[in-house]
Image 1 (tube, rainbow, N blue to C red):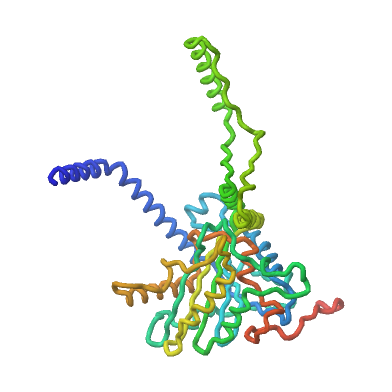
Image 2: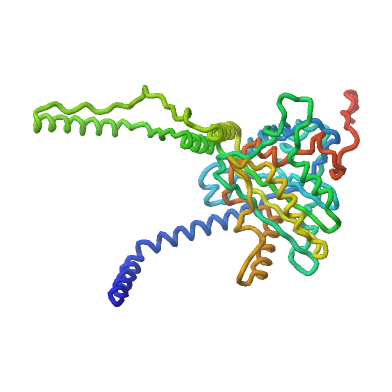
Length: 424
């Protein structure tokens, strides 16, 4: 025992004796991360945000494909950060959007929280796909409830949704819910159940679903295809050999061949060449499910992608608060789960629940943190990749197949101005 203690103290002496080597590295990392958080937050506070509400036309026959085109158009804002000085000194980060589904007073509302400078772009994209829709700027709904929830009058349950697998794996999208052979029939809208839940909310109950997303470069597509290649059993292709490395390898091989011939008296054996003529046949041994997974990954990586995160919260007055209004919308979201590929689940780190020691105080702290997070809608951490098809599945306007009266529709059609209308 004494020998073990002596060895332990010797280790500590050595460890702290070389602290001048490892301690500056740790402090530098801590300073760098703290600096980035500070400048990102400072830059984010200077941004000018507005909230737009979209009222879709009634009896809309379009599908989420229209919304997919809107997301594709919004991908064009990529490139906010021009060079390293802007990112690491000024705190400039890639601009992002927040499309939100909100239910209160028995109605479903569609909000777009955007930077003011992108208002014309967003309105143009929406009107190009939904000409009869109405867009107007409205006050932010998040300020209609007190900030000190939970209290004796209000309660909430919320979480951030995360993906169960690598984001290269796709979720179930609206394309899989459409009957391609019957194009004249509306498809099963995955949001119809959520609209019904919104329609049954009582006075004093609210549900917020915020989808934050920002465009990302196409590098993620290479990583996704690498995941598919790994499942397929393909070996990773080594990077091309540089001219210097090739010259060095040739010299070493020549010297080795000469020494081998001198020592043994026989010529050096031939080296194995790349087997380029061998055809890979691993795909023949894949099951139908494995082939579907690989095909799904490749299809996902064929479209533009966004870095995204999803926040969910249910708020209600204490006397009518019920966990049934938590399980119902989360169950609707799970309808787009693809058990062979990917789905969403509440992130345990950002879910308003706590067990064991000081559970009530810890839960209240998480609730207040989540409430601040829902109000701020900040997004400077890393999310997960969703392509435009997946985003359109999660957020789109009700189709003609949704027959609920809970959405404030536009009852009349807008007409264009006469061509001979005088300008003055």
